[in-house]
Image 1 (cartoon, rainbow, N blue to C red):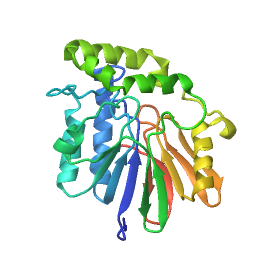
Image 2: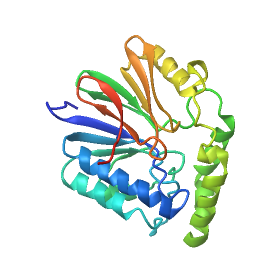
Image 3: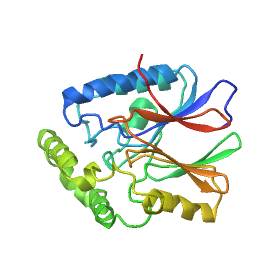
Image 4: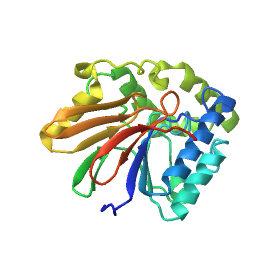
Length: 253
């Protein structure tokens, strides 16, 4: 993708809309929609790196209610010809075509490499990558198992969504409550994962979400690891102007 002069690529992650309550979430959702409005003025593309919702499951003909402002704004943006790309997170593993069909947004279930101008980007949500985190990795296998999804789909949506929302907030393996402090570069497993990938092939930027911490760490060999933070505490995002990448905080006017 070649970025025209004056255009930019934007990245954001981890909104967790719907948590901890719909009322509290609505305040954050309005701020996020304002951000989408603002960046759409010069966006060449927008990357959302997962956990936009605190829970999302697509039944055959039902999706969780709410989030109308966000979904409507994303539809408006793609209708204007601005591409939006989505990477599923650990809270929205169960996307099955709604974003593609209704919003014209490609959805990726694994990290993917992109090239913008002369820079290479390795992009993903970040869950289940790198060493450790074995408890979550086992749980993810269960949640993505076709049989487990089939059984869950047979629950009435009122019961299934309520149960999933409860577990999403209460279960630390899912909620990520333990992932809100900097562990030190040598213990940051996504940093370790990026360094291993860098040994195989050079990338200028490794961009992830999931950790809920805005981080920018040099990896050596002119490569950088960037974590986007979240839209719960930090309201941070990254922007690439065709030459360099920068982490910013959205200050709503």
